[in-house]
Image (tube, rainbow, N blue to C red; front, side, top):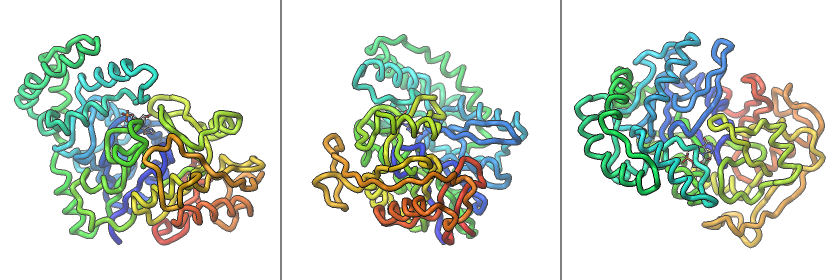
Length: 425
Ligand code: IMP
């Protein structure tokens, strides 16, 4: 079996962390390949809650190599905080267990400043970014004026790079009404971060290839979701990286012929954080119920998520863009107790295999599915689901055209139904 890529098939927050956790039991490495600390998921370590933004979900499994690939943008202070928080709760990561690509980009203080200033300047038109400096860091990467991890760990390279780049950055900051930053102060603050991270920094791609040659299994953990993708998402209300499965290759240095499976994570309904079009959003009572029952508040920013109904047109497009081979359906339990559940089967005037470049005018076509009242959290096999819940799962499968092989019926690790060879290994 080739390596496995996991991606969100909606706008992020689909519950990828839990599915990665289930699958990472069988893998030797978990790789982040894009995004940065705009992502977030909560883990419970020895009874203590730890929120991870950058470290891959494999960190709880001793012996599993966690990789931060070249496609990731790394805020070194945040990464060290996570490493320290884990250590404080009894999980000390060793350099053998964490590899940070020397080619990954570093989020600098001016990226944070510019993210905030640009959002403020946009006013009503703001993207609603996480203000973690993600977009400005990727901009610099593409403009060939980034600071890479290989620069951060070398005091001389760091100083040279910061002094070379800062005047232009300060110009942009001042043009937006911000205060200029001091190059020496940045170098002073970042040098010790680089020195602490240095033992973990290396050629992540080479290590992944070594594992591959030895027949080891690698899991690529996507962050955000398909419709936040810079090319295929709801532009310009997107993040600045390639969130699609294809990004796993460029963002890690692993060739596409080594990937065997692409798992799409879908919530049984839809949520979105930040601004941008959302055809099936329910701004009334239905959406409010989903938010309250689903605990739909962001792990990174704490913002209330916008909520709405399952959109099959969206997930069908995600299946095409990512080449999905299996679906994991999460939070099905949240729908319990609803008399009727609207499901968007397509957009008016669009064929099933067609998708508009902008969703601004997309009008969802709904069908109403009968709900169920039973609590699902105790179900451990697909046959234990109440009839209408099973019908819902089958309809999702049929509308998207990809088999549902994992159904999550509660937040706990055990509250999961698995079927098919990938999840039941
Ligand atoms: P950025 O990634 O901080 O630049 O934010 C761009 C858009 O992506 C905003 O709408 C964010 O709310 C959204 N976003 C970024 N990361 C996540 C995530 O992990 N889950 C859901 N939305 C996200």
